[in-house]
Image (cartoon, rainbow, N blue to C red):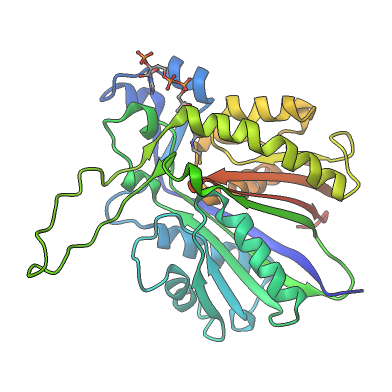
Amino acid sequence: MAIGVKICSFDFEVAKTTLTNKDLEKFLDTTDEWITKRTGIKKRQILKDNETSVDLGISAAKKAIERINFNPLDFDLIISASSAPEEIYPSTSCVIQDAIQAKNAACFDLKAACAGLIYSLNVARAFIKSGIYKNILIVATDSTSKHTDWSDRSTCVLFSDGAGAIILKADENDDDILDIDLMADGSCKDYITLTVKGKPCPIVDKAKENKKPFIQMKGKEVYRFVMNEMPPRLEKLLKDCNLTPETIDYFLPHQSNQRMIDALAEKLNIDNSKIISTIEDHGNMSAASVIVALRESIDKKNLKLPAKILISTFGAGMSAGNAIIKLDENI
Ligand SMILES: CC(C)(COP(=O)(O)OP(=O)(O)OC[C@H]1O[C@@H](n2cnc3c(N)ncnc32)[C@H](O)[C@@H]1OP(=O)(O)O)[C@@H](O)C(=O)NCCC(=O)NCCS
């Protein structure tokens, strides 16, 4: 058998401070009823000023390592998938490498917004299948709340701060990643934006004020993009793996909006009982969302293993990553 990829461990961390819809009502022209009805979100976790997404990433990585008692010196590669890292450089993966003492690992960051986890999974899979690396850590972590305009009720109610970490190993006898589908459409680049601007050389030009240093989102366009683009791709992915909405055990969509999640499942003819969602408690944690939802659902026994899971993630770019994975009973 060709070299396969084993999903050995995964875990997550979320920010400690909880912000409920009722809390938002105190400073925003919104209501718990509107947010619940339109998004399914009831609360979100928010970092304080002195807390960072790197702290969350390190904690998620340590938890994933402890679960299987893994020696961090055996990591060959660390990929960090943060949409908006704390620092442009050093890369988040280098900071995580130092914190977990994984000094033999090469490190780089991969940026594909909320699809970053599945993009990273495909890159890691290629490294493992080619025989280049054997043990890879992926960490998806974001502090989206720090990039949100807290007076913009159409975006700030959605996002939350969290991290997820996955450990992958080369396996001669098994392959947990059945297939992956990546896509991007740069013509939709202005649907979700977060602009970071440096300053020009003062001799050459005067610095202009960055008027929009926060997340800007065209919510309706995002919604339409997902509903149009994802179903045919997910149907093809299932078909390529000889699976159907009936034979797949669970559907794990990006935790963006419960209405969108339900509409996607309906369009795909996937039964409601197969949907994995923890959006009510966490909101949208960017690329970390699907790991948080998966780990929590397994730990709360809402998801029975072993299982074949259809994953769909999407976000700024627009970019999207879909995957079908299988998980063993003891993960
Ligand atoms: C953002 C989103 C929840 C908005 O829901 P919507 O049903 O499209 O709502 P609209 O934008 O049409 O706004 C309807 C009204 O509600 C208002 N509104 C928006 N946010 C509100 C809030 N938090 N509370 C109360 N009212 C709000 C709007 O101002 C608008 O008022 P108006 O009719 O007086 O102009 C929805 O478009 C969405 O979730 N899109 C996908 C975004 C996403 O998932 N992005 C992340 C992908 S990684």
